[in-house]
Length: 166
Ligand code: SME
Image 1 (tube, helix red, strand yellow):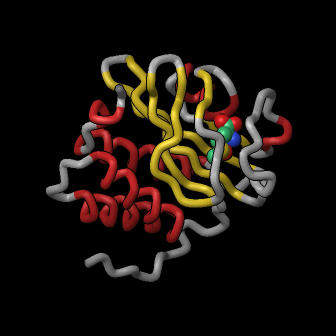
Image 2 (cartoon, protein in one colour; image 1 turned 120 degrees about the vertical axis):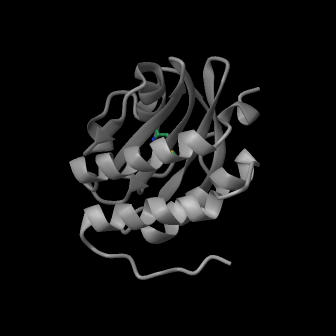
């Protein structure tokens, strides 16, 4: 079973280990819901100063809440709305230092102050986003973006997101 290890503070090492752990957790498992659930838990339990971590799944013209850890969250987000909907529509990572200054930000948890959202696309089509919220401003920097995009790239290779896009 999964053994929690002490995570290093320097971000490059942290993300190297995080990606390796996510790889080990999803190894040989084909069920997407189970894999995303474990990855949401892994992120939430290892990343410092994070109050919400999880996935929204693209269904039609909306994002629908998927596996996550943190407070209950809004279930449906229209494409283009909020930080998640913007990441989905533009298919680019959104890193927001202060969510209160982001036009259209959807406040699911009033504790959230900064946020990063990484999109998953296939053949130019949005499939899902990974959303991580922090209770402090400016929690995420370029190293987080690089590390989380590396995690997403690894997951995109082994996870069948289409299982959830109905
Ligand atoms: N704040 C997000 C909504 C999702 S919650 O943070 C979990 C947004 O503006 O898209």
